[in-house]
Image (cartoon, rainbow, N blue to C red; front, side):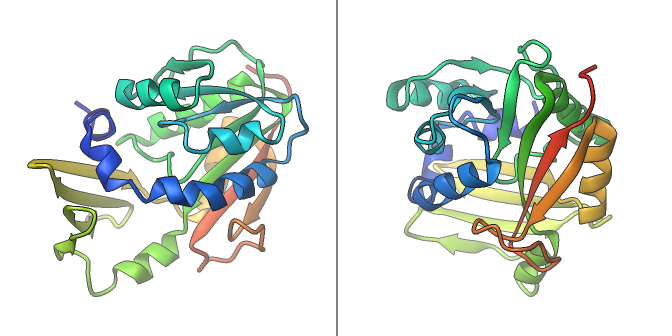
Length: 242
């Protein structure tokens, strides 16, 4: 089983990521503003998780359709933020071609797959479901920021007593991926995420069919820098969808 199919569909997910509920109050409006689409636009929230950002997208007058692999998250979403949504795999989205004005891919939800071809396929699916001129907002962790943050603590167990879990993170041998182990509720969870360089991200976006890429270094839309904590890309769908 893929790590994300296990980790994100376990009740411990909501304990480990409890702080994300508070973060949504600042992240949601800022990311919705960077998406920059007018009221009435149809936006696919992929992955939507339990819908923490949904109210902030909806507040801008956007028509939101959610999608996620996790049944657990989708059930919570349906209770707390009722909306159209679908269970899905990023590599084969259940939406028709050119059906959306925007795709919203929040914090580091690209790079889950082991194979580069599958990560590229995810972007190609995002491009397929967008109309020509549609917008993808791809929100990633800044690679250089993560490297600096892990200096001196990589491989060490860190205890988060208030949250009730412990974790340790290491870089893969080739330096491309961060592997994080967490112990929570008597279970072990293992994340394995590709952390691309800026050049790799831009090359993948171009190969997937995106152009006119603007990059930001923070939620406030500040200019991109290599050292920024967030690398946020706003990319426009080229040409005719294939």
